[in-house]
Length: 468
Image (cartoon, rainbow, N blue to C red; front, side, top):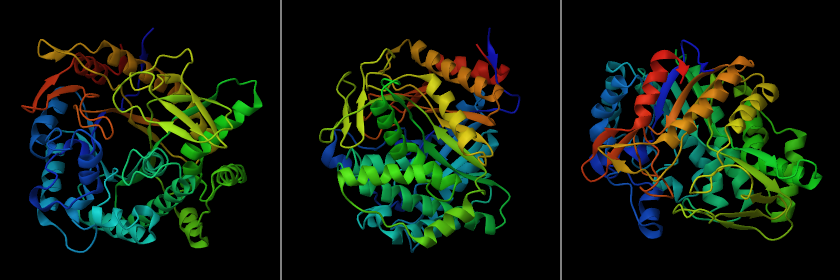
């Protein structure tokens, strides 16, 4: 029997400035750390990506044609402030006004993110959010955007604070490419959450009529053997690193005793200390009930096993299935050999994990208000045939995740929308262009768009509210 979604549900597509816009040095845009890092470490760049900077009218017309009534967009901080602060770049400001006007013309609600992995280079090279001055510059940038772009009704401060700390300081796949520094991971999480709270307070103080929230990536962690206490502990510690520490900061305004016990254990095993200040917690506490929504990005779950060796992480960037290794000293190791389908990039496809994560939020953080699924989708090596892609695997993936959303809503969760990652094919941070997620296939040579089979399927769901 088919399941359904509420009448006022948002059927969205997600993008991010650096992954879609291209035009990385156009019209006064300042550099970001990724520009140099990609050139030195990977086999591709973000130029021209999907050329959203010039092609956005085409993409928004496709949204209107295919029933997509919401779009996640991020503002490139360095388009507004090329150095992260100081002089404003008027051409960058004008671009986003035109973009938001086109969204409204096409009846597509923009959900706008202030920071999606792209701190301006001048601030990034000075320590990014480990440097507390970056917090202040971010808040000033946020205040400028709130004042300037009053046509925006939905603001997100940060996209995926967890994967930023993970990518920059644990796995080392993001600039500055530091590996296995757990103290920096937690400090980055904490400082970015402090910046989030300050921006939320500024928005509420400004008396704006829109809504503001944050987007967290929440991969669900399961013990490999639920009967083995050591595996249960490994899953719990991994959850603290990626989920609970950040959720506590968002909705409790402090870190629970359980969370801090886990953090201390992890730092004892790996070294390092944290700088957690009284004034940070005052800000976090003041903001904890003011988040209008939580965005959840969900792609996968992980199965954790006890492990007492040294840390070793191998990132699978090319889609060579089975190429991933993930073991953290004092925490545990991810087991990939479980009876669960996985992508070529070793991402475990487990829709139940999304349901479980939503239920955890509503039970542990009842002040959450409402949830949007702000990213979910299947990265695939699409085959382009007959001017389209017959992406039945993607349709099946989306269907399964929408079904568990329907279940979560039935069971009391206030979920108001779903944004497929991604609207069109985009550049993928540490995977380049082979890994495609879009509803619309992009020929990166010609920049022509082609609807995939999934786009027609998604359109039908958006029109009927029924998950076919």
